Image (cartoon, rainbow, N blue to C red; front, top):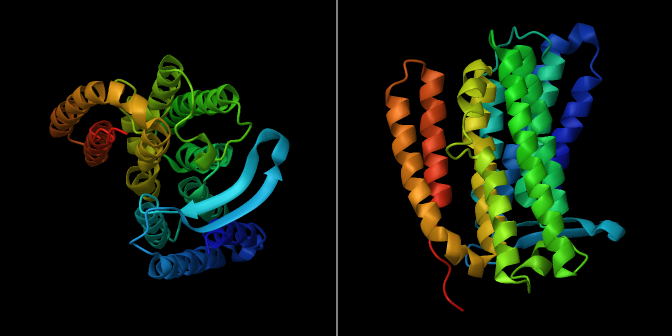
Length: 320
């Protein structure tokens, strides 16, 4: 059920890449839209089979991959990831449908669009921390190329800035994941194994803050937000739709899934500070958005305000 959402888009991208150049303009869009439609329909099937009364992961898939590293191909969907999967499938379909039919280099564009869909779906479905990180980095490459090739006048600057910030985000997240797996002594990166690690509070606090900064760049939270307006303005419109509608939610999802989910007790120490940071994000994003005259900048700052506020203003977990 779940692997289809990842590997169908990859298959579509492969087919598009093999199309003859003479047929690329006419066929690439049709193939991409066809595969996006299949994924969207399959997402509907997934929703129909999801048990809303169960809180645990459902429709799980597990396959041993690199056991020595603790890396496994383990997928699952729950009430947190399911709406985001639906949103990803829907917005990618809309982005492909709304793409200019006279776009230059259509094969590459539609390949990147489908690979972006696969990377985001994989990140939302991963139950293994290293697997999540791999998909988290995979989605970076298509968006970077979309901005760098089809972006506006300052596309080189915007794409490079996006790459640097998100690469730093990935480094911090990976460091926190490795630190958690090594210090806990489990030798595994499976989400279920690493929940509530038996580590000193000070160690958990360092790991949690590292995750918060890493995912905070992706959201992005003030003052880690400066890459977003440039990327939004210079990106082609379909890419901007995916950036605001799906990709920024990876940061919020990561904070909830791995910050709150892995460190529920330690979260109580940082939650009051995050609440104040949420207030700053909401007010700053609102006032700056009001002052803009460029529609894309308005969307950038307003979406940044929303994600920054929601991700920081999370309730305290119940005392155990």
